[in-house]
Length: 291
Image (cartoon, rainbow, N blue to C red; front, side):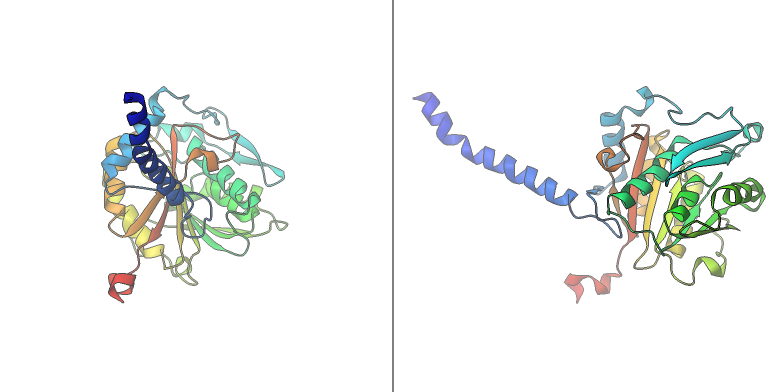
């Protein structure tokens, strides 16, 4: 008798669980901006997202520098049906604050994600205007150009020499798109070429690295973003406080989502890296409830 009663009472919680799972699945199928693949919306607070990433991913226990070798003077990667070769300057890493002289895992993840997303028809880069922030060695920007985008690779004025060499070596006249190097200091007024015509994409890897840089980074993201701009940022999970700070500040002006590893290139996945997508919120007066 008790078993019969339990069977009669079970359907309601089962239906509730099924509805919750369906809601979660539907949320993942919405896509965001120009990316049509599944995206997990980031919750109402940066703390919840960082707790989720650190609790589930255990980034500190994952292999460090899984795809790169910082001691080498060059880095090679097969992408876009060719072998890319990027110069590195390991000796420059001894200078305080200089980190872009070598390729990092997050840049590899972002570059191969772009290639995979284009190949799987979840992202269209041909003819798009894009900017890479803090380009460093320029891997993601070069791959975006080879995939058909017209890319402006940016970094601080004193970091452009190595970047220009790598663009010259890897983005030739036979590329589907184009690549050009230009300086950009976050928080400062950007060069007019970065604003007109409007950008379709802003790309960045390991640009969320210190609390002090968050405000300037967000100023620049807001300056570069229009209503049809999609921001894709990859970052290594080193400091939960910095990430929480960025997410909390970013959600004031942007919708933020996380692209789960199942959507990345299958050969370039690591739980030490997170991949976020941002789109600028519409002005309140233009949102449906205020029409």
